[in-house]
Amino acid sequence: MKRPVIASLLVLGLIGGSVVASAADKRSPAPAELAYGTDRLQKVDVWPGTVRGAPLVVFVHGGGWKRGDKSMMKGSAKLSHWQGLGYAVASVNYRLVPDATVEQQAQDVADAVALLKRDAKRLGYDAERLVLVGHSAGAHLVALVGTDPTYLRKAGLSYRDIDGVLPLDGAAYDVPAQMDENARLMGETYKQAFGTDPERQKALSPTVHSAAPNAPDFLILHVQRRDGTEQSRQLGAALRKAGTSAKVQGFDGRGLKGHAEINRRLGEADYPATPVVDAWLAARFAN
Image (cartoon, rainbow, N blue to C red; front, side, top):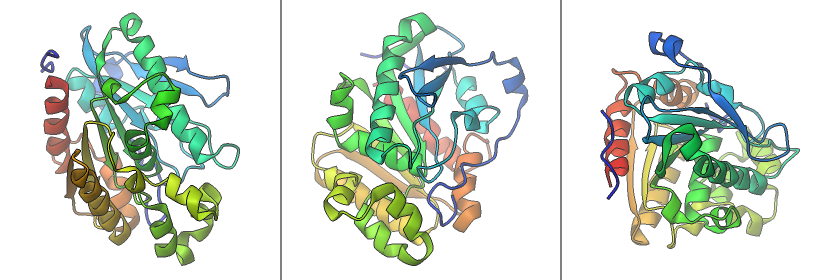
């Protein structure tokens, strides 16, 4: 048994969220930067836990699959809060569209996880307690890695190697439906990421891959965007139908402000999603 834990916008992911500095960040050491590939973007920042053997939260940024950076974690409420709970934290960079494909981005996430598990002893966290968290486009990527075992398998891993997946306000879990929903406003962004081939679009849809095997547990959070709400509910329902534990919960917030806020404010004591995520993380790391 694992040890108990130690006490956006209509454009999917074009805004990764601003960051909030805190006193906790000032006492935190600079992260270790690790390379999991040869490309300049195949890097991950790691903040070790305050004690050895801490669980690891792996975060994947948003940015419409074509922008964003791991540095968004620095100074954030998420970082200071998770460190305050005793967790180690990693923030993943991945190659960006159009220089890379979404398939390559998902593989980058899996390869980063493989590296983080290999370096766990050296960096002092527990490789056996690891969850994936992603916002917006990052939510799509962690959901895809959590439902299509191809990516972890290629990295030499399986679903035994991750304890859960937490997507934050994603909306591309069913790519063809999302492209239809946003053809007027977001068509070019989705077309650039997912192309026009319906079979490829389905292959990149976490909901299509919801049949087992999947990651063992999902917490799917969303704000009140019509597409994000509907797609989150459908993904959760499909996972549960397949026998996978999946909870879906919505929070106040609309449009650009709400989409950015769930990422920016997560970790703040008075933000409603913070205790929900805290409880889920504690349960996943205690199993």
